[in-house]
Image (cartoon, rainbow, N blue to C red; front, side, top):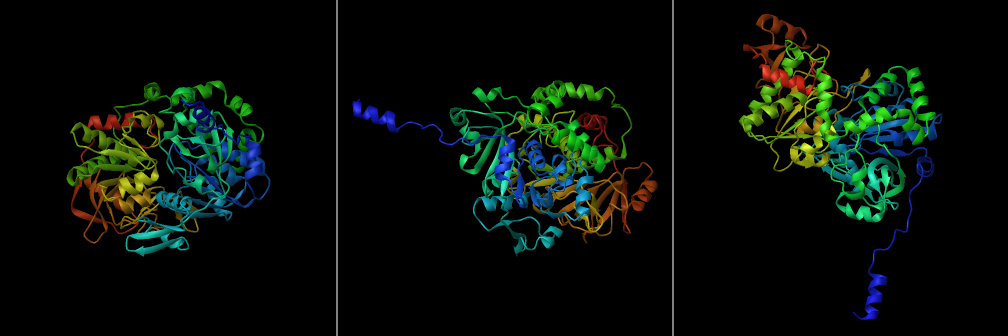
Length: 583
C-alpha cells in the first residue's frame, strides 16, 4: 500500500479516544445538576433502588426545594424524600409499599394529608408522556384512561380524540436519576433488560441524567456491548461509579460478556424494604432511619460497611438464577402443605380455573397479571394449561414475556424469572402492543382495593379520606385487554355500590372472584353472585351478601365452587410458601 495512504488511514480512520469525562462523585453530581424547584425523574428499569435519590436527600435535608417527583412507580425507597418534605408534587402511576405484599404507604398518606399533590396516571400513559417528550412531541395518542377518573382529573393533560382513543401531553423532567450496569467516562450507558419504563425520562430531561453504575469501563468495553447501550453520552450529565448502587433493589447482569461478565448480580433486599416500610409507620422512627441510613452514612464505603458482608453475600446469592431452590427449602421448613384450603386460596384457585376456561374458549395467547392473588391465579393457570399443551404467554408489565415463575417467591418482578422469558422488553411493548395492539389476543388478571356493582375498580384514592396506591397497569389492562378476571378480598367497604374513584372502568371485566365466591355480569352489566366456596350453600350466600355494599342479586342456579384439587393446592403453596399473598 502506498505509504501516504497508509499514513492517512492510520491518522484519519481510527476510533478517537473519548474527549469528555463525566465521572464524578454523588455529591458533586447533585450539587451541579439538581436545583430547587426541579421536576426530578426517578428512573426505573428492572432495578428499583434508592441510593441515588438518597443523595438528593443528603444535599437538601432541612430545606424546602419544592421538588416535583416523577416516578413510574414510587415504592418504599422513595418515601424518605416525601417524609423529609422535599416534594410538593408527585406524578406517578403507583405510590405505595411493595414488600412483602403491596399496600398503601403511611408516608405517602401523611404527605397527601399535608397537601402534597399526587397526580395519578396509568403505568402506560405515564411512559407515553415521557416518550412524547423524548421525541420532541407536545402530545401523543393513547388507548388508555377513557372512562376513568384519571381522564377527568388530568383533563389539562388528557384529551379524548374519539371514542376509545385519547391524547396525553408530554412530560418533561428537569433532571433524571437512574442506575445501570456500566458506562464509560463519556456517559454511554449499558442497561440490561427488562427495561420497564425504558430511558425516555433520561432522554427527555432538560439537563440530562445522573447515572449511577456498578462499574465505569473503557469505551472499548462499551462497543463490545453496543447492543445493550440504551443511553448515549449526549443524554448523560454525570456518571457516578456506585457498586451495589441499585440497593435495595436488585440488578440482573444477564447477557454481559468479557469484562462486564465480572459484574456480579444481586437480588432485591426485601428485608431492607420491610425495615424501611416499618419505620415509615411512625414519623419519629422514620427520622431515626433517615439519620442512620442516609445522613450519617456516606456512600459507598460507610454504606456498604453498614450493610455488612453477610447481607451483601445473601443478596449476591439471591441474584443467582439457581438460588431459588435453597430459598424454597428454607421457606418450606415451617409450611403445612396438607392444611385445609383457606378462603383466599379457594379464591385464587377458582380464579385460575376461570382464566383457563376463558383462554381455552377464546384462544387468548397472552395472560398479563397484576401483583398479589391475581398473579398467583395467573401462574397456576399457565402451568395447568401447559400440562394440556395449551399455549399461553405469561407477561408482566415491566417487560417480561413468556416467563415461567420458579417456586418459592411470588414476587411479580422476581429477577430469577428473567432467564425463563422468551422475550425481555419494556412497559410500552407489553401494555400497548402485546395487550392492546393490532395482533393482541390478551386476557388480564387483576386485583383491586375496591370493586363496585358494575365491576369498576378503585385502587387509587378515597377522595377526601385516604390515598391508596394507584393504577399501575390496572387501567391499561382493563381498558385494552379483551377481557379481565379480577381477584379481590371482599368486605362491605371494599365492595361499595359505586366506587368513589374509577381507576379502571368495568366494561371489559366479566368476572370477579373473592374469598366468598364468584360474581359474574348479567346482561345489564351488574355483578351477580353465581357461586360460593362454602360447602354450606345457604351460609355462603349469606356471607357474600353481608360482605357486599349493595343489594346483591343471587343467581337462581347459584352453585358451590369445586374444592381445590390436592395438586393445585400444593402448587399454590409452593409458589407462595410464606403465605404473603394467599392468606
